[in-house]
Image (cartoon, rainbow, N blue to C red; front, side, top):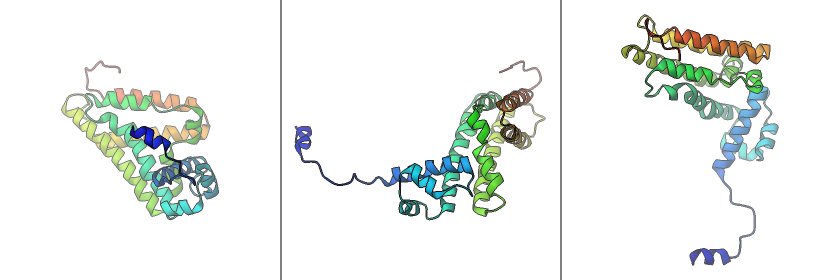
Length: 218
């Protein structure tokens, strides 16, 4: 009965009610795409506003400045994506080597991903020398990535899944360097084959971290 009563009520005229959270998310996603395509310094606010379908006033209401918008991209898009790709698979995993191999094999070799490069590294290379706010936020992502991988490798050593002669923090740092290094080489070459070869090499290196006598090839 209540549904019928509501259905017979006259509709209110005027614009649809505002949804501030949705507006903010549209701005954030549009800004991420523009920054990924053009870099932060060259990213145009007009292009972001047009893609998001909002006004300049809405932008400054939610973020205050272009820098604040850039920081939000790092904290709310790039950092969660990094955690999801690299750290979540390591949570409560039986074998960190298996989990890391899986994460590496899921790296995209699609033309748009290879050609655009890693969003984290792109911003680090562009903005870390110029802006302390970017530098500190990006450094936190790299540090958490390395610490998370190192902790998983350390736990793997304790359970006989990882060679005891490895230093977990060094191995974690080398993994990050290889992933980002091959990504940079592939972006520079604009060639997915470079990334495909890199993935194969990283996987073989990860397999070499198993203890002697472990014939597992996964």
